[in-house]
Length: 400
Image 1 (spheres, rainbow, N blue to C red):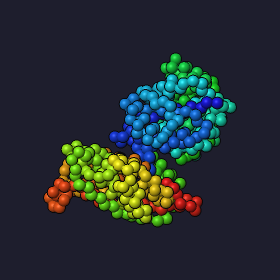
Image 2: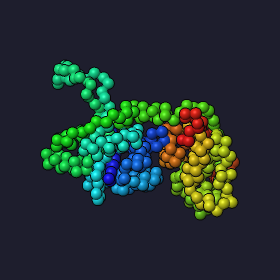
Image 3: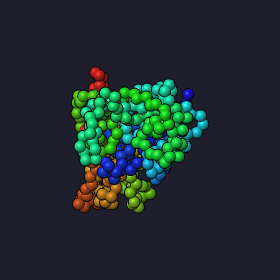
Image 4: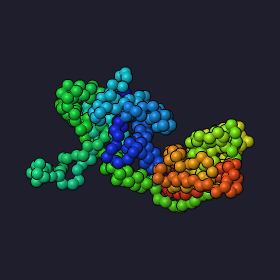
């Protein structure tokens, strides 16, 4: 049987109070949306994924999220609608060929598990419709418009509905057709199915399966993730330094950002001194030598290579030894151009490559007040420090 997941991430996330939509915010170094997508990517019961995002994000999401994180099950990326229900309907239209079961999940619920997906899919196959949820733990009061209590509801059979929800494809199509005809908007997909007389099976999920809506939700989600990683065993720091001479006919690239200058930095790779210094700091913290040992300039494989690729490989090297990255701090010393307009983009590049929070990456800039080779505008120097932690999970070293 063919099962397709529709992942909704079409909202702007205004309640979070961030300039970045909540589905793209980093959660322990990985975008919230990617964390959810990765679970569906690895779930064997899911054959294809349809991703729904804001209309303006269709191209960038494909390049920066789907392709970067190798999410091969995503067969379509479609534009969201005004309401969540409109977005799901657009996702349904994108399903091609025969489909037996549709799973719908909020892209800002990043802490679901493969087990939840399996359970709702199995229930949808047998009952036609199912939803993950949790039993209400608090006493529920029903009030009038005056906020005076009218009734205390028995909580034994009350559930808080979550996603994923799963449905027989024909049942969901019928429910959406009826909703469009009646101009009805429900608070979830299960409510549309209930309107046409199909019973929805509730499946016990997890109280950790939270929806990222407020800044507090991000903090709670980070805590859940850190708790699963394990206990800190050892904290180590490393120092990195790199310098490159200016040269004509080269691009000036720092932190993965190309800066407008008539000349760039001389080097075997792209000569990104900032990322090279960070690589050395990380390798030093983990006791893994230096960048020259791993990527020698005598090897043509590294000729003009992007240092973003080198940084990603360094991340893999230190994680293989059981280290996780805590934070990065770097200082770029150069006379011109001014670094400030590009620093934020550098931080984003570094954080995404290392899969850590942007808040744990700091890039500063200084001039050398006209002194030395930097002061004479002959080149760039960078100093970097990195802090890593060695962790153990269930008695063995964690691999990130």
